[in-house]
Length: 350
Image (cartoon, rainbow, N blue to C red; front, side, top):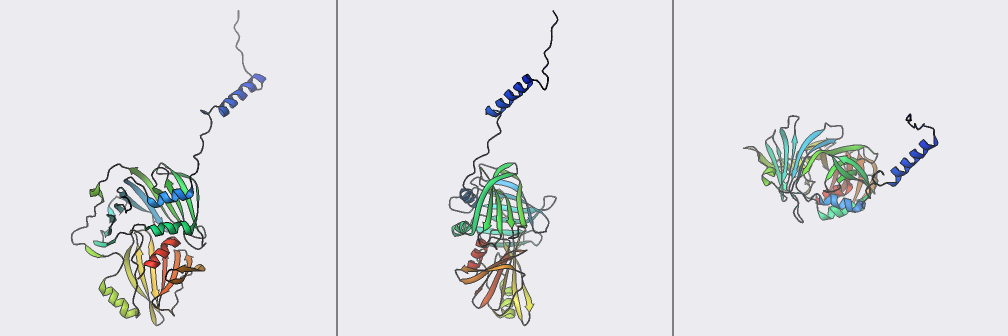
């Protein structure tokens, strides 16, 4: 007897039935179904986690870019966060060959910044992130959450922080779902421009601390100066040439140090400009007599209430702007920082 082979024609009823059965199996069988998306947590809870930071020690490599500047690489290593305290951390900007350029270190109570090229060390109290500032974050922004892309190979939640005032610098944060570490951070101007970005390209978490790896060891003969205020000789010159008593912040975000002081001629007066930096981002504090004017090309100026009185908030392509008066002097802050941080700095100026 001759054996025959049954061929199913593409257009036959049997072919259609088999295809339909296969499709039903794909849809109904959980093993074949598309993976479900993780349910979104509350945005406020993820924000609180991000503000607290990771509990575990970690190290990694971060790329940082501000404005149109070049991308810089930074090695980061942090110890376990103590209960109610600030973590010990070390951050180090490196060149293309991995050689150290600028080192930031803190033991939780003090901060040091070492510029190897200048052989100079800035020293001052550790900034930390005060509880009242964490509370201010919740009141200054409208916060939304969505599923974030993977960063450094890790799953994230994406937070969008939009200033309620409409004139401050906003943020986008990609927060590690398991470890609470902010793996990617963007600063957003009111017109939607991404003005600064930092991103982990590599991160690993450990179970134990290594204090020796966080220690700052400046070269012999390094010059030691204050982190936030100029030296006495510079202060004396400023008083003499401006005719007013200069003021300086007692708190700045971690890593910021006083880079320099300059006096800008303005008619028959002089404007004091204090330049601060954390190695990637700049912060300017201008001070001048009450009848002088400083044109920064600000946009969307709005009145704000500070503990010291009434001020104004605005913005430029360089970041958020906050202005106020104190002791017969006008002061203006400019930085790529959120409105709550600018206000916290302003309240610390003495």
